[in-house]
View 1 (spheres, rainbow, N blue to C red):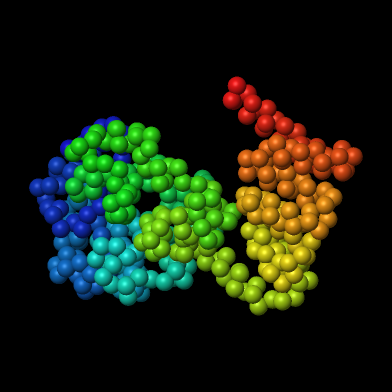
View 2 (view 1 turned 60 degrees about the vertical axis):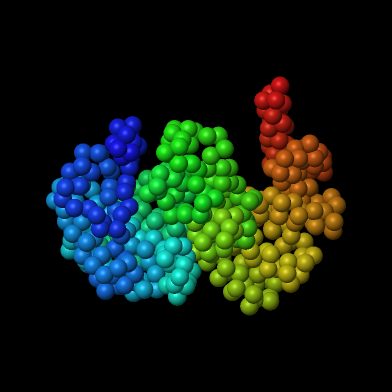
Length: 413
Ligand code: SF4
């Protein structure tokens, strides 16, 4: 009934199941309900799947695929990747293809439910690139559509290509953050409503459809606040300073919740986060400041502002008052949207050289972004004055802040 009501109101309703109870007499009812896709878990070859779940469950899942496929219901397989099955991915792929499965979602198993009792099952973050490579290779085969779940990413070229291969278009498929509570919700077996069915922590239950209408739960202005109101500045670690942070917001919240115990922590299972950590580790081995300066300048020239911010931070570890590194760091942090860090770097430049034009401008712009527009304007005026109002960029920035302040005045009047 829930599916019927959702589908008649143009909400795509999918079911995720172990397939155990899907038999011929239920299939017709499901088909009539307008269900979008029925996804069945396959967590390994027969022996592995039955070991993780229970004896006989693998065959029940395959039987469910067959009856659903015969009835023309769209199906998908979902594989939760663990140390038990990561080496079996090519075999699982063959099984699915041979059983007529067209769509395959792969996701990482995190410590919750039964998985919590098996810490040895958890794959380490460094396996993310292995998984992304596997998905990429599978997408090129064009025999099954592989779909890395929202916990697999982010911002790698291969991930983008996988998504383009799935949609068969060149449209922008860049990760735009978790959809939980924004575009999707989950209905649990007992009617509890959650932004994402993977998050089982009771704190994230938004209500129960036996007690409150779905419409009221969804339209509650305070509902799903953990996701709808989340900002980059609430995050920590590399996510807090990530150039993609405003959009990505740390990727999958459930990854952070189950791994770190808090959704506002950094995502250690992000491929981009791994790359940043690798870069930092490699830079620790470089002590030569001129080599680091060269790296920083090249990063800026290629518009890789995140790398530039990291490289200049490394220079400042070695040489804290290096004025060129402070200036470049301020610029790179600004371009990454890290305004507090930008302000900090520019303040240090101004301690050394109080009339540094670009540090004055950089501090002004960052303070404006941080909400102190009056002080920002004052600093931009000073920067313009220091250049006799002849620097076109500074004049543009000055006018920009003035316009923004006027807009605010109009909005608040
Ligand atoms: S480091 Fe964090 S914010 Fe950046 S892409 Fe990865 S998960 Fe997203």
